[in-house]
Image (cartoon, rainbow, N blue to C red; front, side, top):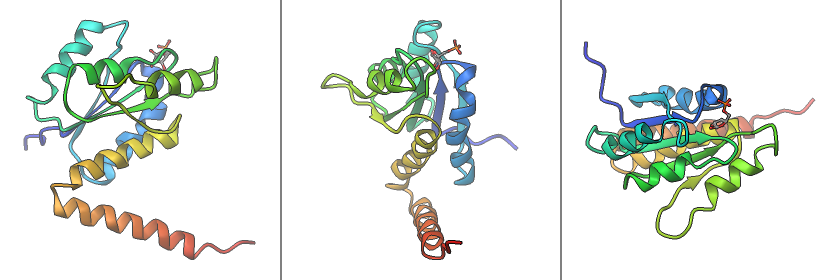
Length: 163
Ligand code: RP5
């Protein structure tokens, strides 16, 4: 059986970002969203990155999640080459603990937005959930799944018992 066409592109600046970005991959898999994961670097493979972003919409992608660390310009560069919504995930870098990645990703000048989530693994998971929420605006069955997820985590809080 042919694989479904990906709706979400999960890209990252380096293979070393995978441990973090796998959180987004996991969320998308849990919600049954066809997606693809790739390493693309804004500075090591700039032409490839631009090509990926500028052809993404025609290939059927609806959201791009881009994770990078340090001088993290990947999400911004991708956003510059597509009108698809781009979610930026700042990596928890070793030099500045991710503050460098956060500021590089979040501080986009007016005109080209990047929806930036929290630093690290929580941010990557939330990027997956945000992509689901974006797709759910036009997919009732996905909206129901997202609501069920929210109900589940609310129930977990309500049933929490402390030692
Ligand atoms: C960025 O530089 C990547 O996104 C990664 O977070 C960071 C370090 O990359 P490696 O030197 O581990 O490949 O481009």
